[in-house]
Image (cartoon, rainbow, N blue to C red; front, side, top):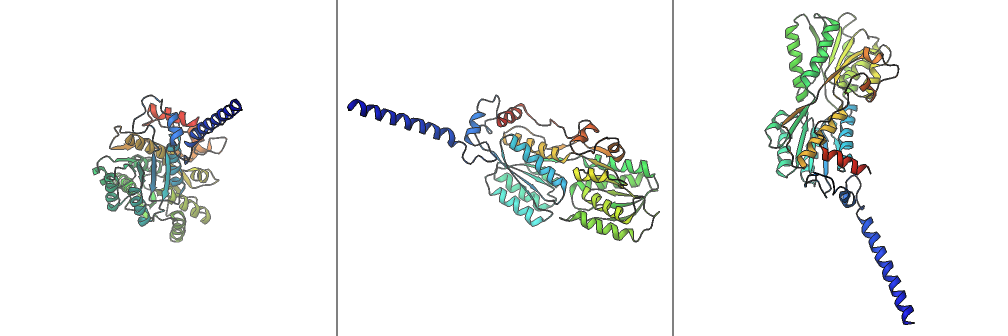
Length: 377
């Protein structure tokens, strides 16, 4: 009986050990949605040259964009989220849809939360600068896209942009090439946003060099319904200007261009051509429609912008050196080139027409590549 009893106790102890071991193995997965957690962090422990600030820690990032309601915003946020999650980070995103109060409140909440870093987009006012100062005081790393230039004076912040001067130059060079130096144009633009200010500088320079160009009208609003409001405004404008009085529209934002294009098509005024800035799948579809007046747009892949900004933030969190500013290279997309494709062109297949489109290895370190490989398993 004693032998049988000792044998039974031994089996029970073995079972307890096995159950305990299983519990330890599975416990690391708890709450690991969107981040590495303990189990995933353990899987990366052997990665060579993985920065100590990244190793064995769940990194949390917030991406906060002031403007919204457009496909460019959707792709920018998706690019940052996809890149961050590929690294095993937890990434939260928020678009204020042009509401300054909501944007600043999101920055305030991020400062008081446990985020390691914050990416902001289109923070254009002095209040943004003060909010970013608070983020830095709280130890958060910050990358700012198309935002107030005074952020350059905040220690540790990197400002990124699309090379807005190049974007405007591409669009306007195409306009002058096709419409001539005596073109009659409508200027769709809104003041106050840093990228718009930079684009306007180029526009004023082009007008100075081409005094024969006539600006017929200028207007623009930045709201959650920019495309719809622009469409209505352009429709009203067309009633004042019969055929022959307008040759082209220079749209400094694709939300302006989409609204203008719809207005021109509905009014049967597609003799007026649109030269825009920025691009998305919806934009490309519109440009490829029959008799579309949108003939050219200068752009940087917004998804790539989000990804590059995330890498910059990751380097900051890791304690690595980053530049104070970084400009992403722009390209010009012509309707005529899109028409050469046998299949409809989208943001992915655009690379078949524009070499290098949507691709960038900027700030992608070897440890990031290794992290992606480890988290993909």
